[in-house]
Image (cartoon, rainbow over all chains, first blue to last red):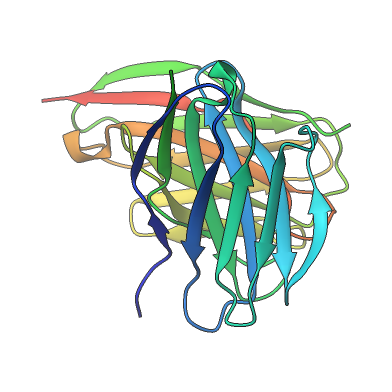
Length: 112
Length: 112
């Protein structure tokens, strides 16, 4: 079974631009979560989607948004990029709540 | 508010040693605890998941224990190898659907 895939793997943007990241979960998994990883803050939860509904959101500004499609693929969008948004963005999927979460390789975003 | 702490932050050991990584959490009301491994610049690899009703889980040379009442978990690695060098992260699932709260990690270096 293929693992969680994320595209693109690397991105370079400038301040003020917007960016869209994509995540394809493991086949059959309906829960998709997003995390931001930075050297200073570590891994922080962004949001989680299940069957196209956002069930939980972390403490991030409204510039961070996401959605999930009927095939469980998910996208996250960051508008008006700031230098502090430079990070590794990780996506995870699981079959059910409280089960093992499987992470993708991440998208490394650099904001200049 | 759930907080997760990992000690030590870094560890360097010679090959063949048995070692213990520690994880503590402030709120004992958890659903499960998951241990991950992260290689530099990569995503997270799930190692072990312990449900709140379990005391320990084993996979090969890895053994994870959970003491919910004291808010502690340990990851025991037997007969360490250079290939075990990575950052080890623990994460607790304490509500909010699939939201994981991560510790800052223990950076492990196993030298030949």
